[in-house]
Length: 171
Length: 166
Image (cartoon, rainbow over all chains, first blue to last red; front, side, top):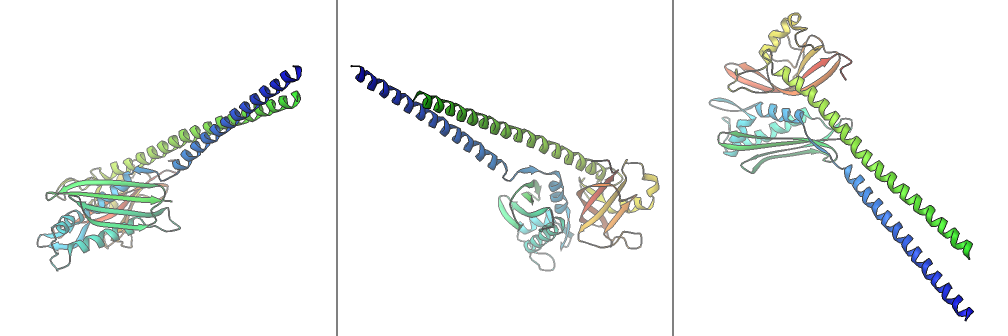
């Protein structure tokens, strides 16, 4: 009788011990999951950060006013006017393709203004020009990773809705 | 047997305390990082915006701006002819804007040489007053009249403040 009750007591104690171990393991798992969750947030937080930049906006604005060497009988076109000429598939008075001049001019302006490389803070840039949703120019130079600053300008010229977006990536 | 169970319980408690402490420490670091990063970003953003707005305000002042000389009124547009005239009488304006110096560099097309009345407009840089101190710069359109036609280039205006600006 006494021996029987001792066996029952030991069995109850073993069961309680197992429950405690299971509870402990559960708490460890919950804490580990919570830590993993926090770490994933931390890593995501270090990804590319963007910011609307007044400087980049000023660059886009001054690039649009630049006077190109493409002209008609009224005079030289600005980049803004050349975008409309390109959309209308017009040619310069000397026969050159307006879209080629536009592309080359924007490449040269961006390259001179945002020089990138291993010894410079800028790592690359992306320039897109679209008219009424149709992409006319797409320029991508350098590495497009890390923090970036961008600017989007929407203008109306000669009845066309022009959108110019410029994004500069920094190290 | 009882001693072993007691030790086990103490171990459990110790592990739990360590785990809970670690959890709170990580949560604290996480939120602290977010708060500090936000503060730094807003401070840097405000500083940059303030400096650039000062430069933009200066570029849009009547002594520099294109006004309506080139058709429509433009923002961030500097009249090259006005700046050249201004560079000939720097002593009259040296204290007018409360800055150490102003300089304009033509970026595209890139041209070498300091502007003088002899080489204008085939020059790349104009310095008004001084080019020493802490410089804040922004992009502008540098426009001029050439044979009744307007010509605008891409340039950078740099405003120099005293060394204690930052």
